[in-house]
Image (cartoon, rainbow, N blue to C red; front, top):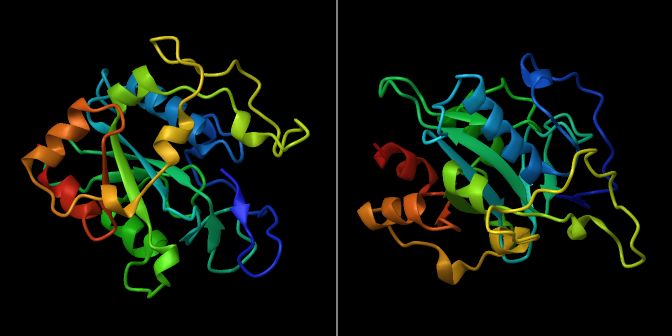
Length: 229
């Protein structure tokens, strides 16, 4: 995950981490690995179900890999807006249907975690009109499938000379259960042709069974989570 030039060169924010963030592993610009480890820890600590079945990994990007998100700690701006090439968050389906679903975003300056509706309104800001090239797509994957299938050898974080764009995590690279060494690009690639037109039982079934889940538009993100049982 890397920042793009929104107005000028972006720099790291000096904002302090919200309460609770420090208990989770976080390496700047490696949001996919941060969320991978976050899902595991939420399950291990009893915050989520032990099998992670109430957790969903959500990749945010688009065809041009230019997505504006607000309240991001890496932004130097007061409103926290930044242009990412992609971003990854975790959404937790609450056991009590009367409680709001939660978004776990280690890079956000919003309360951690935040209710899904709040996160959508404040971070995605669907009411804010953006040019079509900045429209955001959301790839939703069931966490148990993601934890078995995801792999990254971090090649995307090296420049043409083989130098790190951003320092990598200190732990070993993540390898999928089937031995795959790298498939991050499969999760990041998004085409408007693959975005579902409506959210139905087939959409939910695909998320619960398919390695790459489904691709939804921002207008269907909250609807999807309102329909899962």
